[in-house]
Every structure is written in structure tokens, then in C-alpha cells.
Amino acid sequence: MASIRELHEQLVKKERSAVEITQETLDHIQELEPKLHSFLHITAQQALEQARAVDAKIAAGEEIGLLAGIPIGVKDNMCTKGIPTTCASRILENFVPPYESTVTQKLLDAGAVVVGKTNLDEFAMGSSTENSAYQVTANPWDLSRVPGGSSGGSAAAVAAEECVVALGSDTGGSIRQPASFCGVVGLKPTYGLVSRYGLVAYASSLDQIGPFGKSVEDTAILLKAIAGYDPKDSTSLKVEIPDYVASLKPDLKARSKLRIGVIKETFGEGLDAVVEQAVTKAIEQLQRLGAEIHVISCPNFRYGVPSYYIIAPSEASANLARYDGVKYGWRAPEGDNLLSMYKRTRATGFGAEVKRRIMIGTYALSAGYYDAYYLKAQKVRTLIKQDFENAFKNVDVLVCPTAPTTAFKAGEKTADPISMYLNDLMTIPVNLAGLPGLSLPCGFDEQGLPIGLQLIGKVLREDQLLQIAYAYEQSTSWHLSQPKI
Image (cartoon, rainbow, N blue to C red):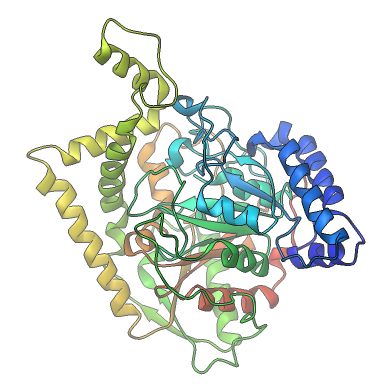
């Protein structure tokens, strides 16, 4: 599939219509979905109506933006008016929101064509998209393997060209890890840069919506469209949004002394040798492009996973308390009394992983354990943030692997939650500190599975991450590879 800019030029020159592009995309989805299962809801009728509106504007001589007529996928934990939003959970199987999330409204205002809602781990809890109540998404590079999670449906859809770009959400790596597994670009923005209004909450102090794209430029275009202050979101930042696309340059030499720090704690035990080799070569390439390379220590990085798996479940236990069979969503058959109905609804409506995290969080917040677990995890979070602050005194950007391995086989880790949680080892600290992080392809293993390089930036320096990622991308050919499905 062509890039956003190429499709835009075709539309403006009237070489193709938005309806033609949309119909081709829908046909492609129909062809691949029996194998991939990337989408929970395909919105063909609405998509064609949106495409016709774009064609009408072009026919009337009106100017259109870059995203007008572009097929986009949206993770199914973002509210879409009149379209089911299930969070891949049985407890929300009949929920149709009466309003739009801020990000989807911005896409509609830009003329984008939403072709469907993508699959995810239930309530965004997981690293493999195997925890969905409805289906398991496959990795386009190897259908026997997972696409990562929780935004695996969005990552797989972009990799398989079922849409041009897609939205995901990232609580502990849920954009970057599937981007690594599926060989696409994924960006988790600074906390507060993109509105969370209409995003179904998992862990409110960590969740952030972000873009997926086949290229850095496509990712930058989508980020520009969704970023910005929103009075409906109390955590939204009131800052000026730069033109992320205009600053993309093919090399780094125009920048004076760009300093990149390599986080030494992310290398060594637990990291696959082939991943380490690919990331090391990518760092050498960044050096050839004009960057200074420094080895940096973030000693508390290793405590990211244990602190995250106290903080996130604690917030989840509070956020998911509202699903009781009364206010909205699915209700179990009536029990003997109200309490019985509550119990049946939550016991049958939630999947195993969601129930596990609710129980962990409720325990961590309970009287007698709050100080021992939740408060201590928050103190560790502060130490991790301080590690980043100290590192950024000496360097501009940090690099490390996105994930310790390439995509693993479906079912391989479902019986071992701890092993599954360790997939987010490299990505979780970024969420705990509220920083921006980007994953882009930097190689393949011997099975032909993609490997991701993670760039971590200072607060609100997405522009710098995109510049570095673009320079690296343009000097390599990894992003040009296509899965054969």
C-alpha cells in the first residue's frame, strides 16, 4: 500500500478516488481476516460514507488535508459513536458509545476513513493479544506467532496493509512491543500530549494513545493530527504542537553534537543474542549518521516490571469497579440478590488475566498492604524517573532494544504470566516516567521475524525522536520488507 503522502497526491490529482482506495482496503481486509483476525468490527458502510464525503470535497475544488481519504484502524478501547467499543471483553460486548473519543473525532474532522476497530488483549491487559474474549490475532510475518500486545490488532493490520496507519494505546509498552514484533513504527507519546478522553481506562496514570505506521513519516503525520490540548481531559497538556513532519531530515549531521545514550542495563542476561546484535548494529549506524554514542546507566530500570505490576493493577482495580452489570455493559442472568448478580457478572464477564490483575490491585491497595506494596512501588517509580532525568543531563536521547525477543509462538507463554510480563521489561520504565518512546524496525532474526529498536526521548521531544528515527530509516531498508501472507 502507498504511503499517506502518495495516496494524498493520487487523490488531489484525481488519479484515484477515496471510495476506490477505501473499497480496495476493505476487500483486502476481507481477504486476510480469516487468517489474521486483526479486526473486531469492520465498519464498511461508515467508511464508504466517509470516503464519499472526501470525494465530494475534491470534486467541489476544496482543499483536503493529508489524512483525508486515508484508511485508518482504531484500537477497540477508544469510544466511537454508534460503533461497538468492546475492549475485547465479554462484559462490554453490547456497548455502543453515544459519543466519540477526542482522538477519533479529530480523525473524522481531518477526513480520515475509519475502516474498523482492531483487536486487543482484554482491557489492554496483555503482551500478545491472546487475552481477547473473541479471537486471537496472528502475526503477519508468521501466522503461528503472536503480534505482541495489547495493541496487536492495530500493529498486525498496519503490517499486513489492512489499513495505512492505526491508533493504539500504550500502558506499559502496548504500542512499542507489537510494533517491534510486527516490523512497523510505533510511538508512545509524552503522557498528556494526546487526549485520553474516550479511551476506556486501564491504568490512568500510565495509559497513552499513540500512532502506528509503516514509515516514520506516516507515524509523524498521524501524531500531528491527534496531539493537542483537550479541556475534556484533566491530564491534557496545554502546549504548542510542532510540525513533526517538516523537521524530518535524512541525516543527523545538520544537528550539532547529537548525543545518544545506550542504556547498559538493557543488555546482557535475558536478551536474545540476535536481538542484541541487530540493536548494536543499529547503534553503530546512528553513529555513522553523525551521533555521539555514550553508555548510560539507569540502575533502577530493572525494577520497572515489579513496580508496574503493583501500580497498574491497583489503578485497574479501581477503574474496572464500575463494571457491575447495572450501569452499562453485559449483565449475567439475575441471581438471588444484587450481590449475587454483581459476582456473576464480573466472574463471567471478565477474562482470567483481567481478574488476575484486579485481584493483585485490590490486594495491594488493601488495609495493611498499601504501604508495603503500592506506596513502595510509587517510590520506585520516582527513582526510575530520576534515573532518566540524570541520564538526560548527559545525552539527548536514549536507545535500547524494544523487546528482549522476537515474536513468540501463540500459546507459548499463556500458562506462565511472569514470563509474559517480562516482555515489557524494556518499555515499562518509559510509561512510569511519562516519557515519549518510539520503536522502529532494525533487522530480522534467522526465522525472518522483525526486531525493534527503541528510542526514548525527553518530555515533549517527539520531534527529536522522529528526526532520529527518520534518519535511521532512510539509511536502511528494513522498513521496505513486507510479510508474505
